[in-house]
Length: 240
Image (cartoon, rainbow, N blue to C red; front, top):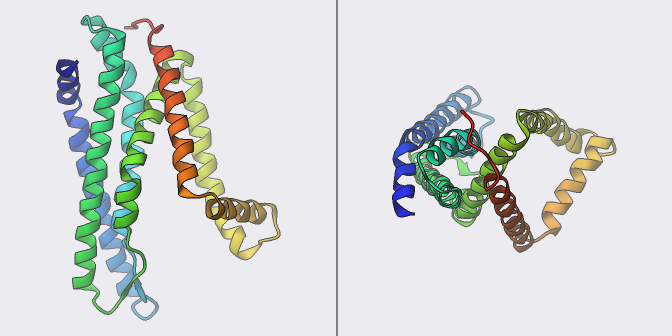
């Protein structure tokens, strides 16, 4: 098993290097963006916002989720055709994705620490809007685990049902990108509208439901996703 995991890590090393570049790139772009905004709107800028950390974390989640999802079929066909059992591949691929995701989470924490120090140096007169480090330390590992399970589950569903499942994910993504900003805007400007009421309901749920409940729900999802993925892969045939 350890040999298979080491092989997976070596094979996916380029993915980790790409993730490193994406996180650092997003962090740098976010820092430059805030610098430009604060320069043009010096009088209106009262708080320092760690845009770099937010952009780096968001890009890391998108990239790692996409890689875990789209690489599953490739590595499955490669490893199984070379004699690896489905059970060993299943565990090794999960662990490899988890290791890479945890490394990404650790890098995001380091960029947050660096951005805090840079902010104190470049913007000593601005108040810090939010300290992201406690949130990253609390939720970094759960998000890494959830992302590993979700990406591998969706990749397995793609192997089972074809491109149709990816169109579903694309539709959900576009719905979030288009509907999310409208909901946020409606909550502030039109609270009595359908979008405004829906946004207010979501905000109330996030406040009422404790963090332990979200964590429990995530654990249940991970267990179900783990079992469903295993059920798909144990019956999946190698395709060329």
